[in-house]
Length: 97
Image 1 (cartoon, rainbow, N blue to C red):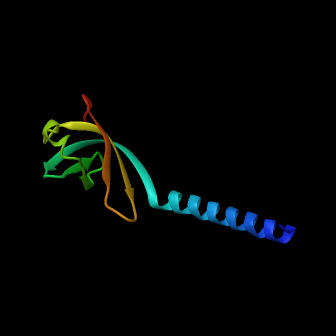
Image 2 (cartoon, rainbow, N blue to C red; image 1 turned 135 degrees about the vertical axis):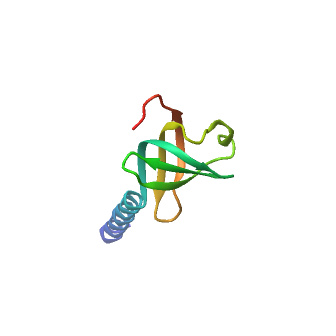
């Protein structure tokens, strides 16, 4: 391989890597919050944050029987530009707001 070919391949690799980092950084966001559950559906919960905002979070059916409406939870959820927010973890909380 010539030096020109190696330089082109290296440049393309760096460009693709930078684009991947930019994409991941701008499309995925992790949120951690103390919330109260205001509503339950088959595959979602409606949460209310301390500042009063309400958000719909997709959940797995496996955890739905364990979640109580009106209770406080410490949750971690992910959201991105390509799909709606989804629950990563949930823990009951003794704290309230």
